[in-house]
Length: 441
Image (cartoon, rainbow, N blue to C red; front, side, top):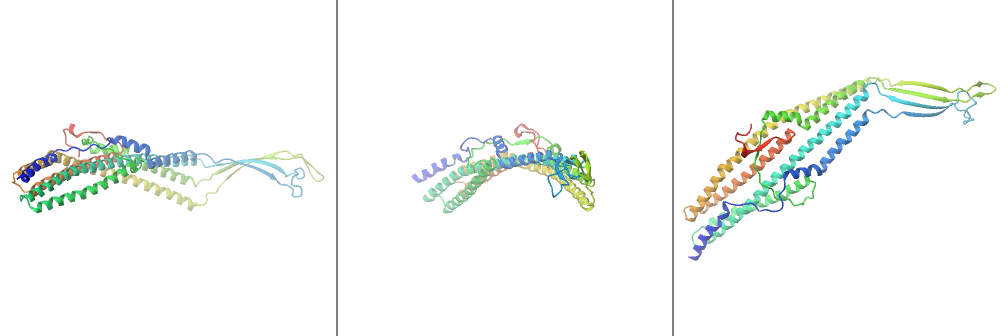
């Protein structure tokens, strides 16, 4: 009789946390904006991308400069038998000269344009990398949020399943239960422990990845994540595509490469024209008075102009062809990216709509109904109107629905982060609770 009373009391107490539970607070709350800011200021790969851009910007400043002039000093027509004497032969002289290489008109400005366009492409590549890093931090954040949420739900359900086992063992000991119920509860508990092990490993990997993105030690503790209300996109598909085509850094980077290729083609055509070399020389002579010759030794000067003969036509045609194909490649990559942006925005909006509807369905329908079903099964089980397997199935169904709700919420926020990366800027969002119209399609 005492055992039967203990069973009844345990049934009354063991289900109290089944319908109400709150996450345990462990450490400071991690703000996603602060994490993104830390990543943008600390990530070494982003710093390397910035340094690459500045390196090519510095190269661009060199492109238009002329080559350094050449200064020449020469002893001209010296006699071998008296090499240090200048007054024995009228052609002997000390010569000082200077020369300057000058490219054909227009080449310097084209070289500068080529270098500036290349540097600009790296600048926009750096901005694109910032968008990618923001997206990766947010994706890791929301994946980790979902895993932490699920580990808390699993802890709650493991306690409940432990109570189930205790109840069934007590009921079986007084002849009110069957051994199959004990095995079934034990099996569900083992399956949940297996899921817990998998999620704990996933949590550690996600924490290490988040610390990697923030350039912190891999074992740096991660605080708790606050719950959130799902935002929604307030812009239409057409508006998002237009913003993306105007703001996306990768588009601007490819456009810079198109400009670079066009400038390279113009420069390749200019290579058919010669470059010039201007030179000037001044000769210091000494007077000569000998038995065979007399010369007053007047100083002399000379100026000259030389240029190359651009007769290697095959080489220059190949240079023009190279730049033409380079322009074609960059143009088609630009067109492909525009097409990809349009497709990706449409796909992400469709997935946001699906995930948003799923979250509303789980919160407003499936989970409340599942909780009611569990409560009804619990009441019936207390008076022996349903068997234990029915009660256990109701508990596990609620667990699975809670898991799917959190996965859908995390996936929604991850898709929103991907949308911002595709568009190239923060999209205007409003809380879903404050909106009355349906999500944009």
